[in-house]
Image (cartoon, rainbow, N blue to C red):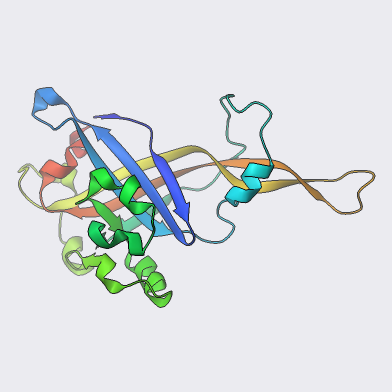
Length: 205
């Protein structure tokens, strides 16, 4: 299936990945399918937006290559997020995930952290237990499009600001901020779908 660029938005301790997957109309698929994956944003994982505003790039329209390739990360998304209550987790969720109302996923380990931070439990909805999901086949191995399975979606961030650069000057005794270091990272998300029809890209070789 065709894909369009993905986006990532962060707010406090929340990181939101959004993917829009273009359907193939000749196969009876809808125009597009939206997915949202929400995880905890760890400190120092991305530079603050305030720092990006101060460190303006000389050529903002330039196509940039990542300076560092970070290791891939595989995530098992075993909790659903209630869209109607999502603003309690992040005010950005309503806008970013508006097209993925029934396909917003997160992880139990992140949910535990947010609950400890005071996020209301009504934001989260349980999917089939992990032990039950283990017994389910990958969607690519299922022939019946109406049966449940475990879907996998791969997402690549080709360029994002991951840390600040520090320079040394002859007239400055201490290092000073002088730029932004960029990184590239691949993610793989596994998540439960009630029917293979919601994971048709798994049919692709």
